[in-house]
Figure 1 (cartoon, rainbow, N blue to C red):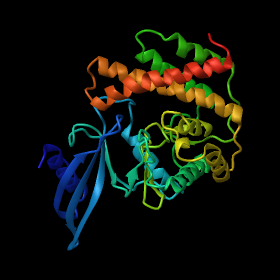
Figure 2 (figure 1 turned 90 degrees about the vertical axis):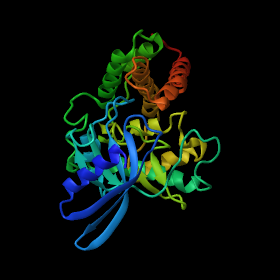
Figure 3 (figure 1 turned 135 degrees about the vertical axis):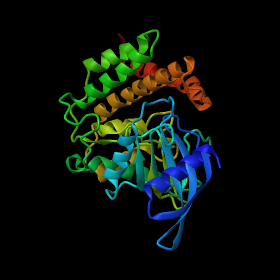
Figure 4 (figure 1 turned 180 degrees about the vertical axis):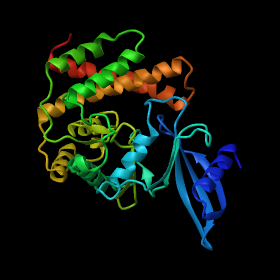
Length: 338
């Protein structure tokens, strides 16, 4: 057994005092994400004379990543949204004490299904892109329809903040640029100035915003059903159009596999909110600014040797220039800079 498997077995024995013969095996890293370390493993144990087993997911804080995620935030979101109409895995244990696995972590069920990665050149949904697309947009609309007041998510960014959602989020990601940029990029700062002069209206409803809702962050089944929406570490309260804009970003857009307009119609039906197209256009520019801030943060962590993750370096080299190009073309269409 690896040291991580041994530590995990010890922890499970600590959290499951009525269980005996706990075994952990098959622990393997799931690569592809850069803000959390994700592992799958199988656990076997006996409880009340009954043999039990199952596959689970361990999400552990990284040494460094694209986003400084909070495990208690993601765990709390999973717990709050259970049974609320958005498919999510069942969570079990949250541990912030570093004595067990060196860093904070939480454990949840391993949901069935496959990820549909946005970088596939062919249909990644095995002939079920129509069903996947319908479910993708319907679930996002269902998330936007939830009453945030009764979810117990007062710890999310945006809760109780008097600033308009657009201003809060733009402030947040401009601060990330301030922290990550060694040299200020006129393109990004010019776009931000334009956005502040031309803000969108207040949202029809303050909603739970996933923050990274896109292809690659959900699992799908052979019939096209989505079994789990994953990676909630950037979740906050805000304008639901923010999630739509992120999902439509050209780097990972579902529009390659499912008609964009049909998707927006499905979202409106599920959410009960009419989409303001001019406001959505503002949020689409915001999505490219946000992505650029994320890549800037990642680039700095790689350059300074804080992170040695290969996926992080490869992501930065491709995605950074891509999203700066998106910003440039968006500003050219508007005919304004500075």
